[in-house]
Length: 348
Image (cartoon, rainbow, N blue to C red):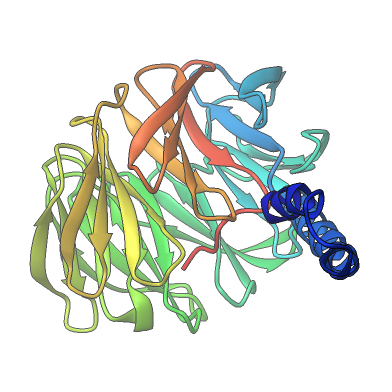
């Protein structure tokens, strides 16, 4: 469009021949402008509009208009909603109420509640296996892991697996054969065979292990060591630590950038977010100047904006990824934890 305006100015002093030529080109410029406008509209249509924030200490969900960055509605959902998960068909958001012993069903684009799944006991952290065959719910309070045969939101309990103290986060192998569970208060990592629902092994970790992330090719498990200040790199096939990546006090949870190379980790106590290169296993940057308690994270589909909950501050932050700077803070409910919107950047 800028070029077209310059050419129109030029044609006022052009010769008639050049004027005719430029007039013909004007149609081409207009067509290009129309294409650009359509592309902009399509890109805008592909951006998420509603952010869902779980206020685990307020038994509610905050719905945020992402264009105005304001809370438009707060909805009671049940006691201690900590984590959430989209169903494999991408149509229903599952909100796990750990103290409510149920899972609430929500429309992820409108925020409308569509029902609940009762008798899901103590669902703190939840997750589908990559093949969508299994649904795993960690009972953080009751020291148990429930494994369900899954058909979308239709869940049938296969087995309850008793573990040591405080099952926390989950990761899976790409072939959906193994689920890994961190055990916060016994400082351990367990591996469960999903087909048999039996514990394969348990190994020690650093203090208060929490978030888990599998590096590409199922090579290493990254463990956020919340009781210390590093990410522990574990060769899970040989059950041994291979490295510690210092990030910040309270290293907690992960969100991959979506480029199959980098992953963010939130450092709850340090109130920072670190970026790790999964190929070199090195920290490559930090986001600082944040409110207290950064926790769960989500990334817009263009890869430019990181949304993060601040557990200790009753706030949600919006971070510009290219500059690694906090650009907005939005007040929400008590102890905000899970965050979700759709569409979003790939989890890889």
